[in-house]
Image 1 (cartoon, rainbow, N blue to C red):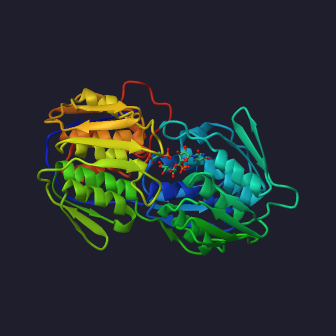
Image 2 (tube, protein in one colour):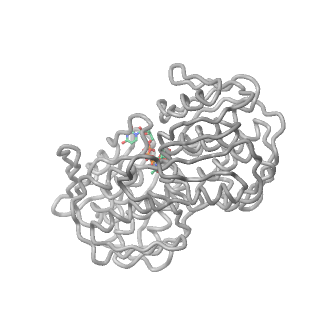
Image 3 (tube, rainbow, N blue to C red):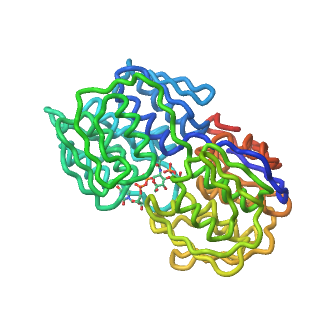
Length: 432
Ligand SMILES: CC(=O)N[C@H]1[C@@H](OP(=O)(O)OP(=O)(O)OC[C@H]2O[C@@H](n3ccc(=O)[nH]c3=O)[C@H](O)[C@@H]2O)O[C@H](CO)[C@@H](O)[C@@H]1O
Ligand SMILES: C=C(OP(=O)(O)O)C(=O)O
C-alpha cells in the first residue's frame, strides 16, 4: 500500500506531457493476442494496469517487455489457459480477454473483473453480444465460460441497450474473426474505440464506422501485426492536469493533447472563466482569476466524461455560487465527497446530485483515494490546501496515472510517494 504526501499551497508552473491513453492501452494489450505475429505498442503509459495485464499475458505464455514506453508482446506461443481469478480481479479491462480469447480460440474462461468501485458495473451487454455471435455463456461462481459453436462464431446484428465502451470493444474483439458480417448498433463512440479499430485494421481486420454509433465488421480468418501502433493521448489525464493547472497553476502548458477529444470538458472550463490557448497538440492554461460556478452532467462521449467529474471538482470549489454535478453513468461515483468535506469543502450529495459551494480554503489532512479519479480529485485538492495532505490507497492513482510523481514534481509540486504501514501484497512497479 502506498501513501501520497502532498505539501500544499504552492503555485505550479511549467510543462507536463500527457501519456498514452489508459483506456486504449488496456484494450490494445488483450487485443494483441489476436495477432499471429509479435506486437509493438508505443506511447504506452507507465501505469500499474499495464504491469497487471503483462502478468495475465504471462499466465498464457505470452511474453512481454516494457521499456521506455514501448511494449513488445509476443503472442506466438500463446496457450489458452483459464483465467478465473488472481490478477483478473486487479483491473476492469481484464474482461477484454473474454472477447480476445473467444476471437482467437473460440473459448474463454475469465473471472469477473475488478476495477474501480464506482457503483454497479454489470456486463450483461457484453454477454448479449457474445450470445448474438453464437457463443454460449455460463457463470460458474464468477468464472465466465464463453464457448463458440463447433463451426465458429458467426456475424450478427447487435443493438446495445446502452452505450457501453467495454461491451463495444469486447464484441469487436470477438467479431473480427467471426464468419460474415457483424453490425453493432448503439455502439460507444469514445476515441479509444477508434484507436482499437485502427490497430486491428492494421493487423488485417475489417472494421468500419468506429467513432460512430454503427460499427460494421467483416470477419477475417486471422490477424497479424506488422507495424508498431502509437497509442492516442490520454484525454482523462489531460483533463486532470488542465483542471489542476486552472486550480493551482501560475501558467502551465499541457502537451500531447488531441483537444477535439476534450471538447465538452474545455467548453465547461471556458464557461467557468478559465483562460486557455488551445494549440495544435498542446493547451496553455493561464493563472485563474474569478471563476464562475457551473452545472455538469456526465454523458457518454462526446458528452462530459464521467472520469473527469471528480478531477474538476476541486476547481469548482474555487468558484462562487452553487454548482451541481450529476453523473448519469455512475450516480454512486461520490467517494471523494467525504474526503473533500474532511479537508473543509462545503459539498454534499443529495439523491445522487453533488452540490458544490465555494470554499475559501482547504486544509491538508489524511484522506483516502478509494478509486482512481477520486484520487485524482484529492491530488488537486491537496495541492490547493494549506499544509500537508496524506492520500492513502494511492495505488489507485498509480493504476492509471502515468509517472504521476515525476510529472507533478516537474511542475514544482512538493509531493512524494511512501510505503504505507501495512505490508504490501503485490509489488507496485508504476511508482513515478
Ligand atoms: C477500461 C475503461 O475503458 N474504462 C472506462 C469504461 O468503463 P466500462 O467499459 O466499464 O463502462 P461502460 O461504457 O461499459 O459503462 C457505461 C454504462 O453502462 C452500464 N453498463 C455497461 C455494460 C453492461 O453490460 N451493462 C451496463 O449496464 C454501466 O453500468 C455504465 O452505467 O467506460 C467508462 C464510462 O465512460 C469509464 O468510466 C471507464 O474509465
Ligand atoms: C473507471 C475507470 O477505470 P476502470 O474502468 O479501469 O475501472 C477510470 O479510469 O476512471
